[in-house]
Length: 630
Image 1 (tube, helix red, strand yellow):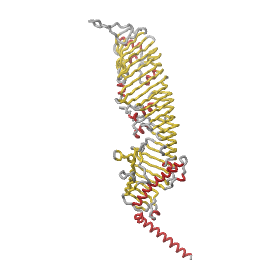
Image 2: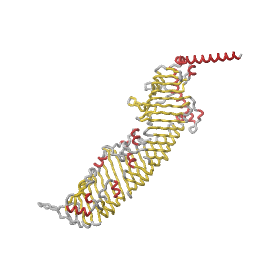
Image 3: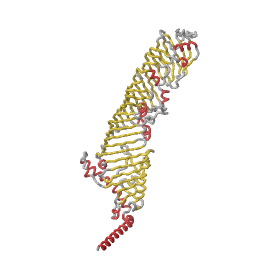
Image 4: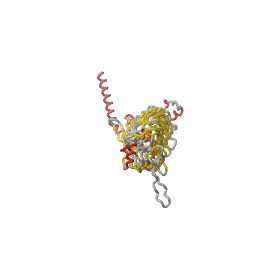
């Protein structure tokens, strides 16, 4: 009896194995006859909402997975028969259910698109997105979820959300294109990744890599309630974007409704702002010199506006705090806000918004002020400590403004050289060319330190004084500004000293006659009671209207011209004991009719001279001999 049961069991197992073997052997035949091309295309259409066309014959593989391999697959909109496909792929691999196939049905959980081409369109928001399907399970699920969200926007009933399966969609070696002038233009290449969304009411994640504008990029996106998000509700969202020029992350909540918004924490870093601007093709500040930039902030954004609060900013590892406001409701984006730093390189910040040369680099050949037509900016800056090239500043209050072709950077208040500094730099684009204006007011500063920082080390009174410079004129490059600008220079100096001048030696050499270099009599210092300089500037040449130095016994005066582009000098001067009027140039007695003009008698005790050469190596030539008064 027991042996009979054993024989029957072996018989049953053997029959079962035979049936299974026959079923497996017959599966490709069943698949090739019952799971035909049109059936797969229909199922893909019902799933995606697009019209799916498969030009090649399906190939069925049983091992290691039961799958269909489709070639020349296109997904198009049903309503636009003449439009190019939204998606076309050289090959699509679909993992099928074997049991469903035996029953004549098609069920798949994973689809792999090999070398797909995805066509996108630029929307009013500026984003590039593919056309949306007009039907299909995905669209119906979103429509149903939209009704659930509308019924209770604050707390939708998640139990009523559709639970239709979605599965996994993988893509390899794809590209994203858009139509420009009737031709496809590639936006993204080498696109690979996957969408993992088991069911419509479950969480979802997207991971993708590709090459955008020559740089490898990676995007990671996930949401615990993706269907609520697509239906216009509020859902948690995490986003990470990684590329060599910049990284960006966001963790918070978002809504994709008509009045969509997002709220959460955002982080942004860029090793080089210049590289980022060039890569993003923003058309701004091609000579921007800011190195690393990082921003961490709470962000609240709605349609057309984004606010960044409790913002931490680091420019070249100089940390700052503040708030920023971005508005996109106007034709040009508007950026405004305030930022406070402990330390800041003003030249780097300035170069980000104006075409100024970066520190340590030569100025650009020509200005490109096109950035002023791409953004409106109103940024308030403050810094406890700041640098502007070699100049050290403290307690700085500054503004950067860009609007309607005008770029302005102002330092409204700063401490430097034991005094106060105010300055302004303006670039104004006009039909006849760019107009540039420079203004500087240094009040009650240490004039010796100020002159050294400005590169003027010869015969500058050391003490306390006030300096004003105004330059304005057309310019396509830095050299042309200084060659063409008009303006003025003025300075007043209090008691101090005139270093680099041995006055007794100077008077002696001037009395002896003959040329001599100023360096020959530079081993001394002259105490002074004060000095005043006024000059008018035209086309790169400064004409001295007044230049007087008052010492205890003498008054020194100069007149003539000095070029600050060629750095040449053509000056006449004199040294006269106090109590005598300064004679600005040798005078002549007017000649009567028919008479020859004669030289007027020179006042005694005045030593006149000519200054030639250049700023770095001036030379002196006596004009007339006078009594030195010694």
